[in-house]
Amino acid sequence: MKSTTSALCAAILCLTVTQAFAADTNQIVTNAMTELMINKKVDQIDKHFAEPYIQHNQTVPSGLEGLKGLADAAIAKNPGFNYELVRVLAEGDLGVAHGIYQGFGPVPLVAFDVFRVENGKIVEHWDNLQPVASPNPSGRSQTDGATQPVDLDMTAANKAFVEDFMNTVLIGGNFAELPDYFDGDNYIQHNPNIGDGLSGLGAGLKALADAGLNMRINKLHRSIAEGNFVLTMSEGTIGDKPTAFYDLFRVENGKIAEHWDVIADILPDQDAANSNGKF
Image (tube, rainbow, N blue to C red):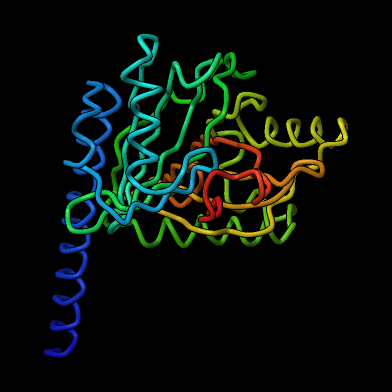
């Protein structure tokens, strides 16, 4: 009994420390995005970011000078720049911001930004961006829906569940098992081309196939979870184009209940502004 109690206490302590670490990361990411992107204080980059700063956005040079150059051109000198932060989640030293940029290009962009924190500052960044689209067949936008993680004690279980779904169905191709991961048509979809429910998902995948654009996910690079939210970062193809898939899942009662995504092309290495790779 004593050893069992000790093990339980150790597990609770570990969970408490992990949640506290994630809360710190969440706050660091929220503060950085608020000050730089929302309040446009581009002179505060050194307060929130530190070298060596590893950049995985393929259009931006690595290092803080690359970030400062982007901030100067896209934010400081761009009166049309605007950012809306919709939701933030964090696990350990990794934080995720989901929001919408205006002014980075001719159309607004929905984005997942992923940051790695070290010694209280952001030292690495990944992202995926996609044009904002009209509401999907179910009338949902790419960012509306639940925003706050809950069920924090279920983080590990939900992460394992979503990873199993990715590896079994989307990577393994076992689509006959798809219903095992969803509660029938009680499933909310935010992909701009697909409606709610398993029926909507099936119709959307069929439409892609009919257009000769089969979607294939080949590798899950990373997953980040907090409570009932799990973000996956994976690589594959649409048609013959190398593609990055960022998928955010909300799990409820052991099933996938809601899904958001951002899908973008992967540039050839020779066309990238840095050598760090997309993932």
